[in-house]
Length: 128
Image (cartoon, rainbow, N blue to C red; front, side):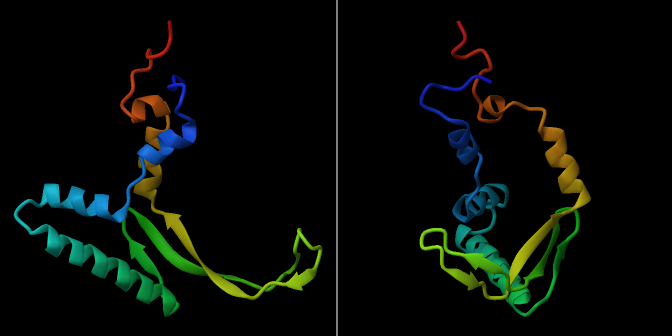
């Protein structure tokens, strides 16, 4: 894998990260007939609704993408590594994502591409 001297693999992965504002911009490009403000409101509403459903103990299923549900984490014995103090953790629920078949296949098919190619760099760059 060809990496620039100052770039690490983690930096390459961060370049491929998508945050909500970027998602809004990408959707706005595809749906140029809609105001970006309306697209932002829609995406924000979807995120809030998903949070509401999960906080009420529900399940979210997006066909082809995956599903979100809650997994119960019971209390367990633990210790503070700094002080050595023994304690019992609080029971909690954690959000669990299970990818759908189409998403799994898409991700697995793209894994043969080296990270340098994914970031738009030439594989030969830096090799002399």
